[in-house]
Amino acid sequence: QYSPYEFLALIEKHNIDYIEKAPGQLFCKNSSKDILKMLLDECATAGVKIYKKCEIQKVTKQKEFILETSIETYTGSTLVIATGGLSIPTLGATGYGYQLGQQFGHEIIKTRASLVPLTVADKTLDKLKPLAGVSKRVSVSCNSQLIEDDLLFTHRGLSGPAILRLSAYWKYADEIEINLMPSIDIVKYLKEESQNHGDMLVANSLSHVMAKRLAAYICNKEFAQLKLKQLNKQLLEKLDKKIHHWKIIPSGTEGYKTAEVTSGGIDTDQISSRTMQSKLVNNLYFIGEVLDVTGQLGGYNFQWAWSSAWCAAKNI
Image (cartoon, rainbow, N blue to C red; front, side):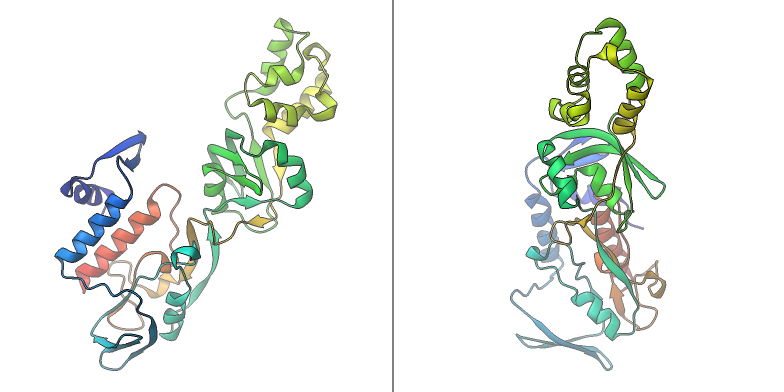
């Protein structure tokens, strides 16, 4: 009912310049604050009142909804829950929307941090330390999901768009597989290199197609001083496994503090997908991230917020 094209039309109406950095990836030319200003301007035009430093103390429903707050008591025929999820608590995120949902009889799908960096155990982290800051285009897989994007090694584990996207499917104790060279058959490459530069060190040859630190990590002690011409079938298979089938079991995630979004939330089975109204309580609406709807990385969660809000507003 409300597509990304409607949102782009709103942006253009407010004369906000944007650029396309990659196909389908649009960014504000100036600052993301332009979007915030646009939303606040739209609120002002519609006569919306925004109360700051106002704590909700109690919500009840008789004929109307009654909100008891630290400022005063408000009543209204309709209540919209737009409190978001648990992600990034430094911005004020709390689980209050889930509490309200339960208060009115709604089921909560278990929440977890999503679109979030993955951490690794201390033993593995010590080995990965030399790679902190290295970024690489890879393909990663877990639970039948295959994603090709950039991976970033950090001082806590693994991050970058590839890992954030994969985290939506990863569960505790799941193994992930990393293909460091999805566009190159490393065995074929090394064989060709051996024919032309047999006396070159394996690490030096690999550094032509990946970061030197990553090449050094892969070669470690076993391959550090090995020349291309010394690679036999067994050694090539080892390198193939290290580069195309690198397996890691993350120890966890960085949690809600850095998660882009919260998976789980208000069960959508109890919400009208057309109007966003509760099927249990008339005139009660849930929109945005408080619901059990999780979009992939790339603006999908923002669009879900705009779309669900638009649908609710049109039906109030």
